[in-house]
Length: 121
Image 1 (cartoon, rainbow, N blue to C red):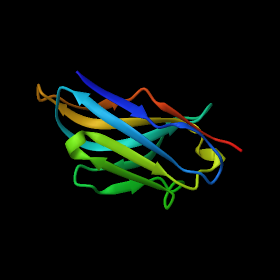
Image 2 (cartoon, one colour):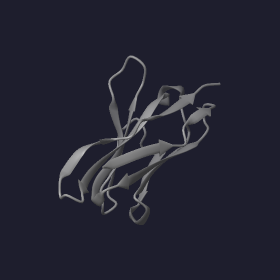
Image 3 (cartoon, rainbow, N blue to C red):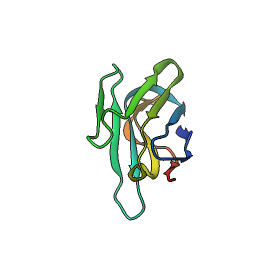
């Protein structure tokens, strides 16, 4: 069984910074692309940033230049450094992984439980 667990959310003032982490554990053979998504109240879940196993990154236009995604493959950990936060960044942030488990089964449907990020004065 594979699990993803996020941490690092919280309350921050506009212009502030937060760092999120997501640790993948369990019966993992390899991890391909990983990503961060977010869902604000009353809105659909949206993609924030993605990173391939080779380190190529992709960002939503709304976070380019402010957020940085990275990963530590040795630790099966995904990170999101969020700077210059805005009230519109307020959402529950989820990590997602495209993972091959020890049985050889590949799935992109692994999600963490989410961590709340609130940007407010």
